[in-house]
Each structure stands twice: as structure tokens, then as C-alpha cells.
Image (cartoon, rainbow, N blue to C red; front, side, top):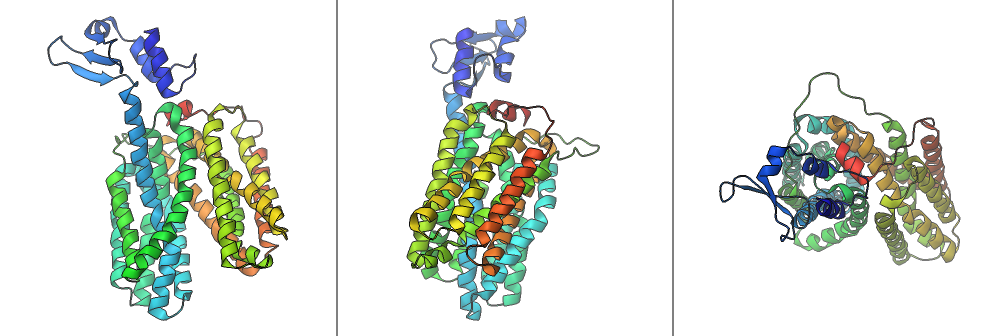
Length: 451
């Protein structure tokens, strides 16, 4: 039995001294169950055979060997669904601009379409998240993805009418408002206990690939027609439906809904991150022009920022679960470092200084988002997880919108300073909020069990 427990810990990522629910189940079985259970030591998977010998036996995998493979397959399936779900949002800016230019001769309608799309997502995030929690996240996601794809098909069909174009964009935004929060709420049910935090950090790396892939797909589909990218967005939603994990629906409990807890602090953190990162990303072309370059320099700057973000997320996926630092301190530290990077970028009148600022901002992107996500995984009530994560993603999107507005209205050296100031305010809030609360180390195992 000790050998089994050791093998289980190796699979689930548990350390000695921590007893998982699976180990507790196997060691606390009654005598009757023990007499009906035979362990096959020659099997590499430690297969438990329950029932009569040579009769109707039930075979189950005790979380080792193929069980680990099943967990990895579940995460891959979740990740594929998540990336297809996110892809339309990455395609939307360029796809809407091209469609608007074809219909009206100007890209301005595309800007309006993007604005109302984000606005509709922000408005719908909370209510849609609550609906997902109430009626089942996986089932609700499939319905919303199908509805979003249907509205995008309507947009492609009535693209010649500016009014109907805006209407269908609004409807799509309303349907898609809670998708990101919903798919995140399914992650703990798709990975093993010891892999949750690494899964979140790895997902932060993959997101950067989706960010780059979205506009590239639009460029590849445009020769087929201006509505082809919009139909491609609908196709991405439909593919996401196929890969949404199938999970058991928790029984609904009546009574007063539990509170979301200290989510406001983390909403501000997500908002501050959104403001700062957008003032850096959207300013890539002004940064390039300040150094005497053009669009090619802007592409280089974005590549540096994305590469730094992927490196930071990958490093955190390796080190994050081992850290003993309170997550509030981690989040505040990331926000402060990013604020310093924003200041360096704001005054980056030379290549080395600007690159240093971009790397400083990018390296903390993955760790910050992972820290926020893991803290909420532990503190959000089970019955409100989709709603809580939807609100966090919405706060980040709202910050991105405000940062973009700052770039449009303020000088190139001032906009990143505003982003840095908001990030510092968020860091101060994280440290100040609930200062007397006891420290709780949030490990992947604990978060997954409480989820």
C-alpha cells in the first residue's frame, strides 16, 4: 500500500505528508471492500479490480500510469477548446476593420464595431457567468458558443447593412461575454491536482500564440472574401463546442447565494494590468516612430513583448508551485515591476532602454495572471466561479479599453505613465486589503480539492 501511495503522489504531484482524497479512499476502505479488491502488482497502472473473481468485475485506474495520461488528455482537450474560444476575439479587430472598409470605404465603422463588441461583453459578463453557474458551465458554454457562431453568420449575411452589422456585433458580444470565465471555471475539473497551477501558467504561454495567430488567420482568409474572416470566427466557435470538456453538473442548492469574497481587490489588479499592458502594446507604433522607424520596428517591439511574456509564463510554470510567498505579495510585486517597465518604455528614447522596458513588462505578464487566477480558484465559491472569472476577464478588458483610449488622447511618453500609475495603485490595494488575514498557501492540490 505504501508503494501505491508513493506512485499516486508521483502522479498527482503531492509531497510526502499530504494525503489526497484518492489515497484516503484507498487506505480507509472497509474490510468488506478490501476483501473484494485485488491489486495487480504486475500492472504498471495499479489496476483495482472490484467484484467477484471471473464475474462482473469493475476495473478502475487508481490515478497512476494511464490515469495520468487521461488527465493530460483532458487538459489538452480543455486547452484546445479554450484557444478556439479565444481565437475570434483575437481575429475581431482586423476582421471588423476589413469588413467596415469594404462596406463603407472607411475603417471607422470597424472601430465602432469593436467598441460595441467589447462593451456588450462587459455588460453581459456578470449575468452570463451567473447563468452558467446556475444551469451548468459545460452545457451553457456549448449553447453560448453555438449562439455566438449563429450571430456571426448573421453578421456575414447582412454585412452590406451598417445598422444590421452593428446589431449582430452587439448580439455576438452579449453571447460571448461569459465564455472566458466559463472555460476557466472548467479547468480544475480537467487536470490532476498537482498540475492546476502549471496548467494556468502554460495556458498563459499558449494565449500569446493565439494572439499572434488571430490576425494571421484573418490575413489568410481575406483573399476568399471580406466576410471569410467573420465566418472563420464562427467556425472557431463551432470547433470549440466539440472540445468543451464534459463534466458532471453539481446539484443546485437553494438559499442565499454565497458572496464573491475579496474579489474587488483582484478586479482592480486585473484592471491595472489591462491598462498598463494596453498602453504598451498599442503604443508600439508610436514607440517605433519616436526612434525613427516604422511598422517594421513596431512588429519587432511586439515580438519582444510577446517573447518575454511567454518566457515569464514558462518560467513561472516551473517555479510557481514551489514558491512559498503569499500570493498577494506575488501579485503586488509583479504589478510594481511592470510599472517600472512602463516607466522605462515611456522614456525609452534609445533601443536598449525601450527593449528593457518591454522585457520588464512582458516577463511579469504570465506570473501575474496566474497568481490572480489561482487566488480566485481558492477563494471563489464553487457556485459562482464562472461569474467570478468572467468579471475578472471583463475588468482586464475594461482596462485594456481605457489604456487604448489613453494612447489615443495622450502623448506617447504620458500614456505608459498612466498605465504604470494605475498598476501601482492596484499593487498598493492588494497589499493593503485584508492585511490581517491569515496566510494560506494556495497549492494546486488545495485549489483543485476545494474547487
